[in-house]
Image (tube, rainbow, N blue to C red; front, side, top):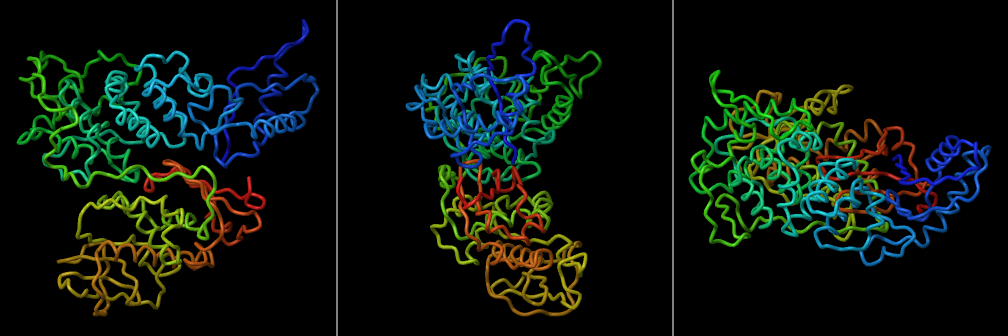
Length: 576
């Protein structure tokens, strides 16, 4: 992982006639190469002032870098973990990961915390002028867009607003002109028209989120802003939803669930939304909000309308011309007939700022294995289990003998349930014979049955590794079996799918890395954990040439289908 170093303000003094361009480049180059000792890997350090003393024009950058390292070593012993009550007189402050500063800044503005102003002025662009809520919200979200996980960090910033009942700040701060930038920051394609009767959302967000989404739907023009905000309401509690190719479909489901009973988007409204939303994404984010897009069904003399006014979730046209009567219900008591109340998502997981030891540090080496086995294509084709990877990694931990108190369990999103049954078919690379696939040439394909489920058919390799499950007619992408297989024990479809992935990972490791599943996972290490980042730390002496040769310890970065940024670090003695 390459660290980013920024100098907020550089003060240089020189005798008359001596240029400062050379020393400026010298300091910049030296700071880029200097190491920062004494902090957890991935931490963000904010320094109030760093006095470098006298600088010679002929000083080598490496020498200055050593001087800076000596200063930083002294500062790191006095640097404090960010907390509003501790930063006023601190010479330096550190955050656990790059996603934390925008979230902490937004929390400080919501709670009106006055401490820490010097920190925000150095790390949040525009924070010094962001005294009002609208400017503060824009500054926080812009800073979130610059992190290594923009969508996830933006969702956490919005969640701070939701918890503080301040999502109206976002509605005021971001209008139609900003919609394209928000969608692009999340890496999403332009949304199509909402479906007529979507499935219920996977869970119900908090009352504050429901209230904000409902209020925005009642405020014309709502448009794709409300679709984006509804999607963020779900992502904030289930980051693994970002692994879906079209996560906004679930946001549409939440919008539909929050609509008044009996009202569904009309066919014409859906056509209008599809025709008007797409041109918006060809517009620069800086275009004035008053810009208009021609109505897709209007005649030559028809009046133009804004793209947002054509959303399927906008209020009916007749309701726009009269003021809305004040609601007699509490703001947090929003009706959601299609959202099952008991399935509200739990609070965010634990965090470990300091490394916690684990005997199963190699679990995260399975992330590139799952990627090479085609998990992204599987989720794009069949989005019913966005938490599939979490279930697979949990099962791998259990198979390797991890106890329930292992810290890696807290890094896995595995509690989402989008329904059963769950028929599946593996990517073609699984069942193709070697060397292009994972199946041995001599391994037969058999069709097995399952106890307690007479309609289920399971295609197995060697009568033990399931690679497809269906009911009724065999899917076209599933190869035929060579004969009747054994009677399998009763289990859920999800358990069979997870077992299929474990079998594929084990075969891939054996073929490409000379490892098996347990030997890959069982290796001493430590982890740090935050709501957005997981860092695995290993002793440099434990580096495994088999892992290196298979490129399993190259930083994956942001992994949408886990909802985390993952980094690996090898340190001398495993200590930083």
